[in-house]
Image (tube, rainbow, N blue to C red; front, side, top):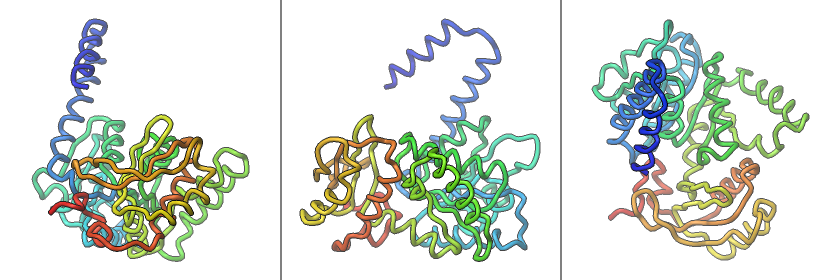
Length: 327
Protein backbone atom coordinates (compact mmCIF):
# COMPACT_ATOMS: atom_id res chain seq x y z
CA UNK A 1 0.00 0.00 0.00
CA UNK A 2 2.92 2.35 0.74
CA UNK A 3 4.44 1.52 -2.64
CA UNK A 4 1.17 2.21 -4.45
CA UNK A 5 0.88 5.56 -2.66
CA UNK A 6 4.42 6.54 -3.65
CA UNK A 7 3.82 5.45 -7.25
CA UNK A 8 0.70 7.65 -7.39
CA UNK A 9 2.66 10.61 -6.03
CA UNK A 10 5.48 10.05 -8.52
CA UNK A 11 2.94 9.88 -11.34
CA UNK A 12 1.54 13.26 -10.28
CA UNK A 13 5.12 14.61 -10.19
CA UNK A 14 5.63 13.60 -13.82
CA UNK A 15 2.41 15.20 -15.02
CA UNK A 16 1.67 18.20 -12.81
CA UNK A 17 3.67 21.40 -12.51
CA UNK A 18 1.00 24.00 -11.62
CA UNK A 19 1.79 25.67 -8.24
CA UNK A 20 -1.90 25.71 -7.28
CA UNK A 21 -2.15 21.95 -7.75
CA UNK A 22 0.88 21.38 -5.54
CA UNK A 23 -0.51 23.71 -2.87
CA UNK A 24 -3.58 21.46 -2.78
CA UNK A 25 -1.53 18.26 -2.74
CA UNK A 26 0.86 19.55 -0.08
CA UNK A 27 -1.98 20.88 2.09
CA UNK A 28 -3.91 17.61 1.80
CA UNK A 29 -0.91 15.48 2.78
CA UNK A 30 -0.10 17.84 5.67
CA UNK A 31 -3.72 17.61 6.93
CA UNK A 32 -3.59 13.81 6.85
CA UNK A 33 -0.17 13.59 8.49
CA UNK A 34 -1.08 15.95 11.34
CA UNK A 35 -4.43 14.25 11.95
CA UNK A 36 -2.93 10.78 12.10
CA UNK A 37 -0.40 12.06 14.64
CA UNK A 38 -3.09 13.55 16.89
CA UNK A 39 -5.42 10.54 16.77
CA UNK A 40 -2.78 7.81 17.05
CA UNK A 41 -2.45 7.89 20.90
CA UNK A 42 -6.20 7.43 21.44
CA UNK A 43 -7.08 5.00 18.66
CA UNK A 44 -8.18 2.43 21.24
CA UNK A 45 -10.92 4.64 22.70
CA UNK A 46 -14.30 5.00 21.05
CA UNK A 47 -15.29 8.54 20.10
CA UNK A 48 -18.53 10.46 19.60
CA UNK A 49 -18.61 13.25 17.01
CA UNK A 50 -20.91 16.10 18.04
CA UNK A 51 -22.19 18.53 15.39
CA UNK A 52 -24.28 21.67 15.89
CA UNK A 53 -24.45 25.39 15.33
CA UNK A 54 -21.54 27.67 16.21
CA UNK A 55 -24.13 30.42 16.77
CA UNK A 56 -25.88 28.74 19.70
CA UNK A 57 -25.48 30.83 22.86
CA UNK A 58 -24.88 29.56 26.38
CA UNK A 59 -28.40 30.50 27.53
CA UNK A 60 -30.12 28.25 24.97
CA UNK A 61 -31.40 24.75 25.87
CA UNK A 62 -29.44 23.13 23.04
CA UNK A 63 -26.17 24.47 24.49
CA UNK A 64 -26.86 22.84 27.85
CA UNK A 65 -28.00 19.66 26.15
CA UNK A 66 -24.74 19.42 24.19
CA UNK A 67 -22.73 19.77 27.40
CA UNK A 68 -24.83 17.10 29.11
CA UNK A 69 -24.42 14.76 26.14
CA UNK A 70 -20.63 15.12 26.16
CA UNK A 71 -20.44 14.60 29.91
CA UNK A 72 -22.53 11.43 29.59
CA UNK A 73 -20.36 10.22 26.70
CA UNK A 74 -17.17 10.53 28.75
CA UNK A 75 -18.77 8.68 31.67
CA UNK A 76 -19.63 5.87 29.23
CA UNK A 77 -15.99 5.61 28.14
CA UNK A 78 -16.06 7.71 24.98
CA UNK A 79 -14.05 10.73 23.93
CA UNK A 80 -15.74 13.65 22.16
CA UNK A 81 -14.84 15.11 18.76
CA UNK A 82 -16.16 18.51 17.67
CA UNK A 83 -15.40 21.13 15.04
CA UNK A 84 -13.53 23.09 17.75
CA UNK A 85 -15.63 26.23 17.31
CA UNK A 86 -18.09 28.04 19.56
CA UNK A 87 -21.74 27.33 20.30
CA UNK A 88 -22.65 23.64 20.37
CA UNK A 89 -19.02 22.67 19.76
CA UNK A 90 -17.75 24.63 22.74
CA UNK A 91 -20.57 23.26 24.92
CA UNK A 92 -19.67 19.68 24.00
CA UNK A 93 -15.95 20.26 24.64
CA UNK A 94 -16.79 21.88 27.99
CA UNK A 95 -18.96 18.91 28.97
CA UNK A 96 -16.23 16.45 28.03
CA UNK A 97 -13.28 18.47 29.39
CA UNK A 98 -10.16 19.16 27.36
CA UNK A 99 -8.47 15.84 28.15
CA UNK A 100 -11.38 13.88 26.63
CA UNK A 101 -11.95 16.31 23.73
CA UNK A 102 -10.47 16.57 20.26
CA UNK A 103 -11.20 19.65 18.14
CA UNK A 104 -11.06 19.56 14.35
CA UNK A 105 -10.84 23.21 13.37
CA UNK A 106 -10.91 24.44 9.77
CA UNK A 107 -9.50 27.67 8.37
CA UNK A 108 -12.43 30.00 7.61
CA UNK A 109 -12.62 33.75 6.94
CA UNK A 110 -15.22 34.15 9.71
CA UNK A 111 -16.87 32.44 12.69
CA UNK A 112 -14.49 29.52 13.14
CA UNK A 113 -12.04 30.29 15.94
CA UNK A 114 -11.00 27.43 18.23
CA UNK A 115 -12.76 27.48 21.57
CA UNK A 116 -10.70 27.78 24.78
CA UNK A 117 -11.47 24.21 25.90
CA UNK A 118 -9.63 22.38 23.12
CA UNK A 119 -7.03 25.14 22.95
CA UNK A 120 -6.04 24.60 26.57
CA UNK A 121 -4.83 20.98 26.23
CA UNK A 122 -1.74 20.24 24.17
CA UNK A 123 -2.22 17.85 21.28
CA UNK A 124 -6.03 18.09 21.29
CA UNK A 125 -6.57 20.64 18.51
CA UNK A 126 -6.14 20.20 14.75
CA UNK A 127 -6.18 22.97 12.14
CA UNK A 128 -7.34 21.60 8.80
CA UNK A 129 -6.70 23.42 5.55
CA UNK A 130 -9.56 21.70 3.71
CA UNK A 131 -13.10 20.69 4.56
CA UNK A 132 -12.78 17.36 2.77
CA UNK A 133 -9.83 16.16 4.87
CA UNK A 134 -11.62 17.35 8.01
CA UNK A 135 -14.75 15.38 7.06
CA UNK A 136 -12.62 12.34 6.31
CA UNK A 137 -11.27 12.25 9.87
CA UNK A 138 -14.61 13.03 11.50
CA UNK A 139 -16.04 9.83 10.04
CA UNK A 140 -12.84 7.79 10.15
CA UNK A 141 -12.35 8.35 13.88
CA UNK A 142 -15.95 8.46 15.10
CA UNK A 143 -17.84 5.49 16.51
CA UNK A 144 -21.03 7.54 16.85
CA UNK A 145 -22.42 10.80 15.46
CA UNK A 146 -24.74 13.12 17.38
CA UNK A 147 -26.24 16.08 15.55
CA UNK A 148 -27.93 18.98 17.34
CA UNK A 149 -29.88 21.78 15.61
CA UNK A 150 -27.76 23.90 13.31
CA UNK A 151 -27.49 25.62 9.96
CA UNK A 152 -26.03 24.73 6.57
CA UNK A 153 -22.74 23.44 7.99
CA UNK A 154 -24.48 21.18 10.50
CA UNK A 155 -26.86 19.78 7.88
CA UNK A 156 -23.92 19.27 5.54
CA UNK A 157 -22.20 17.11 8.17
CA UNK A 158 -25.43 15.18 8.75
CA UNK A 159 -26.04 14.45 5.07
CA UNK A 160 -22.36 13.61 4.53
CA UNK A 161 -22.58 11.07 7.35
CA UNK A 162 -25.85 9.64 6.03
CA UNK A 163 -24.48 9.41 2.49
CA UNK A 164 -21.30 7.60 3.52
CA UNK A 165 -23.20 5.14 5.73
CA UNK A 166 -26.03 4.54 3.23
CA UNK A 167 -23.59 3.85 0.39
CA UNK A 168 -21.38 1.60 2.51
CA UNK A 169 -18.35 3.85 2.23
CA UNK A 170 -18.08 3.90 6.02
CA UNK A 171 -19.04 1.11 8.45
CA UNK A 172 -22.30 1.38 10.42
CA UNK A 173 -22.23 3.79 13.37
CA UNK A 174 -25.12 5.13 15.46
CA UNK A 175 -26.46 8.43 14.04
CA UNK A 176 -28.44 10.37 16.66
CA UNK A 177 -30.50 13.50 16.02
CA UNK A 178 -30.66 15.27 19.37
CA UNK A 179 -32.85 18.22 20.35
CA UNK A 180 -34.48 19.31 23.63
CA UNK A 181 -37.92 17.95 24.47
CA UNK A 182 -40.67 19.93 22.72
CA UNK A 183 -38.16 21.25 20.15
CA UNK A 184 -39.54 20.16 16.74
CA UNK A 185 -36.29 20.74 14.80
CA UNK A 186 -35.52 17.09 14.09
CA UNK A 187 -39.00 15.60 14.36
CA UNK A 188 -40.27 17.96 11.66
CA UNK A 189 -37.14 17.32 9.60
CA UNK A 190 -37.69 13.59 9.78
CA UNK A 191 -41.35 13.88 8.82
CA UNK A 192 -40.95 16.35 5.97
CA UNK A 193 -37.61 15.33 4.49
CA UNK A 194 -37.61 11.57 4.97
CA UNK A 195 -41.32 11.12 4.28
CA UNK A 196 -41.04 13.02 1.01
CA UNK A 197 -37.95 11.07 0.00
CA UNK A 198 -39.61 7.76 0.83
CA UNK A 199 -42.89 8.75 -0.87
CA UNK A 200 -41.04 9.63 -4.08
CA UNK A 201 -38.99 6.43 -3.97
CA UNK A 202 -35.73 8.37 -3.52
CA UNK A 203 -34.78 6.33 -0.44
CA UNK A 204 -35.95 2.95 0.82
CA UNK A 205 -38.41 2.87 3.75
CA UNK A 206 -35.82 1.00 5.80
CA UNK A 207 -33.33 3.85 5.36
CA UNK A 208 -35.23 5.67 8.10
CA UNK A 209 -33.57 3.18 10.47
CA UNK A 210 -30.24 4.92 9.83
CA UNK A 211 -31.09 7.74 12.25
CA UNK A 212 -32.38 7.75 15.81
CA UNK A 213 -34.20 10.67 17.46
CA UNK A 214 -33.48 11.56 21.10
CA UNK A 215 -34.56 14.46 23.35
CA UNK A 216 -32.13 14.09 26.25
CA UNK A 217 -28.51 13.11 26.83
CA UNK A 218 -29.35 9.96 28.76
CA UNK A 219 -31.45 8.41 25.99
CA UNK A 220 -28.96 9.44 23.31
CA UNK A 221 -26.07 7.73 25.10
CA UNK A 222 -28.22 4.72 25.96
CA UNK A 223 -28.85 4.19 22.25
CA UNK A 224 -25.16 4.62 21.39
CA UNK A 225 -24.01 2.24 24.13
CA UNK A 226 -26.64 -0.31 23.13
CA UNK A 227 -25.43 -0.14 19.52
CA UNK A 228 -22.15 -1.72 20.70
CA UNK A 229 -23.69 -4.13 23.18
CA UNK A 230 -23.21 -7.23 21.00
CA UNK A 231 -21.96 -5.62 17.78
CA UNK A 232 -18.29 -4.53 17.84
CA UNK A 233 -17.36 -3.39 14.33
CA UNK A 234 -18.04 -4.11 10.66
CA UNK A 235 -15.86 -4.73 7.66
CA UNK A 236 -17.68 -3.92 4.44
CA UNK A 237 -16.44 -5.43 1.20
CA UNK A 238 -17.79 -5.18 -2.33
CA UNK A 239 -20.35 -7.97 -1.98
CA UNK A 240 -20.27 -9.13 1.63
CA UNK A 241 -20.06 -7.94 5.19
CA UNK A 242 -18.30 -9.24 8.28
CA UNK A 243 -19.85 -8.23 11.58
CA UNK A 244 -17.38 -8.53 14.47
CA UNK A 245 -19.12 -9.35 17.74
CA UNK A 246 -18.39 -9.12 21.45
CA UNK A 247 -19.96 -12.54 22.12
CA UNK A 248 -20.81 -15.57 20.01
CA UNK A 249 -24.39 -16.01 18.79
CA UNK A 250 -26.02 -19.31 19.89
CA UNK A 251 -27.27 -21.55 17.08
CA UNK A 252 -31.00 -21.10 17.85
CA UNK A 253 -30.63 -17.31 17.72
CA UNK A 254 -28.62 -17.54 14.50
CA UNK A 255 -31.33 -19.67 12.89
CA UNK A 256 -33.96 -17.12 13.88
CA UNK A 257 -31.88 -14.23 12.49
CA UNK A 258 -31.54 -16.12 9.22
CA UNK A 259 -35.32 -16.49 9.00
CA UNK A 260 -36.06 -12.87 9.90
CA UNK A 261 -33.37 -11.35 7.67
CA UNK A 262 -33.43 -13.74 4.74
CA UNK A 263 -34.25 -10.76 2.49
CA UNK A 264 -30.95 -9.11 3.48
CA UNK A 265 -28.83 -11.99 2.21
CA UNK A 266 -28.09 -12.10 -1.53
CA UNK A 267 -26.61 -15.59 -1.57
CA UNK A 268 -26.14 -18.29 1.04
CA UNK A 269 -26.90 -17.62 4.71
CA UNK A 270 -25.71 -15.57 7.65
CA UNK A 271 -22.84 -17.75 8.87
CA UNK A 272 -21.06 -17.74 12.22
CA UNK A 273 -17.26 -17.66 12.15
CA UNK A 274 -14.24 -16.14 13.88
CA UNK A 275 -12.00 -13.27 12.81
CA UNK A 276 -9.19 -11.05 14.07
CA UNK A 277 -10.13 -7.48 14.94
CA UNK A 278 -7.99 -4.35 14.57
CA UNK A 279 -6.03 -5.27 17.71
CA UNK A 280 -5.34 -8.82 16.58
CA UNK A 281 -7.87 -10.25 19.04
CA UNK A 282 -9.85 -13.29 17.98
CA UNK A 283 -13.55 -12.44 17.92
CA UNK A 284 -16.75 -14.22 16.92
CA UNK A 285 -18.31 -12.78 13.79
CA UNK A 286 -21.13 -13.15 11.29
CA UNK A 287 -20.43 -13.24 7.55
CA UNK A 288 -22.84 -13.01 4.65
CA UNK A 289 -23.28 -11.59 1.18
CA UNK A 290 -25.61 -8.65 0.87
CA UNK A 291 -26.49 -5.69 -1.30
CA UNK A 292 -25.12 -2.43 0.10
CA UNK A 293 -28.35 -0.75 -0.97
CA UNK A 294 -29.94 -2.48 2.04
CA UNK A 295 -27.92 -0.56 4.64
CA UNK A 296 -31.06 0.45 6.52
CA UNK A 297 -31.99 -3.21 6.78
CA UNK A 298 -28.48 -3.95 8.09
CA UNK A 299 -29.11 -1.46 10.90
CA UNK A 300 -32.26 -3.41 11.73
CA UNK A 301 -30.18 -6.59 11.93
CA UNK A 302 -27.77 -4.86 14.33
CA UNK A 303 -30.72 -3.85 16.51
CA UNK A 304 -31.89 -7.47 16.54
CA UNK A 305 -28.38 -8.64 17.51
CA UNK A 306 -28.15 -6.13 20.34
CA UNK A 307 -31.57 -7.23 21.61
CA UNK A 308 -30.47 -10.83 22.15
CA UNK A 309 -30.29 -12.01 25.74
CA UNK A 310 -26.66 -13.05 25.97
CA UNK A 311 -24.27 -13.52 28.92
CA UNK A 312 -22.40 -10.35 29.84
CA UNK A 313 -18.73 -9.72 29.13
CA UNK A 314 -16.54 -6.65 29.66
CA UNK A 315 -17.53 -5.20 26.28
CA UNK A 316 -21.23 -5.41 27.13
CA UNK A 317 -20.66 -3.52 30.36
CA UNK A 318 -18.20 -0.98 28.90
CA UNK A 319 -18.84 -0.29 25.22
CA UNK A 320 -16.24 2.48 25.19
CA UNK A 321 -13.28 0.09 25.20
CA UNK A 322 -12.11 -1.50 21.97
CA UNK A 323 -9.81 -3.93 23.77
CA UNK A 324 -12.36 -6.42 25.14
CA UNK A 325 -10.65 -9.74 25.76
CA UNK A 326 -7.24 -8.48 26.85
CA UNK A 327 -5.99 -10.15 30.07
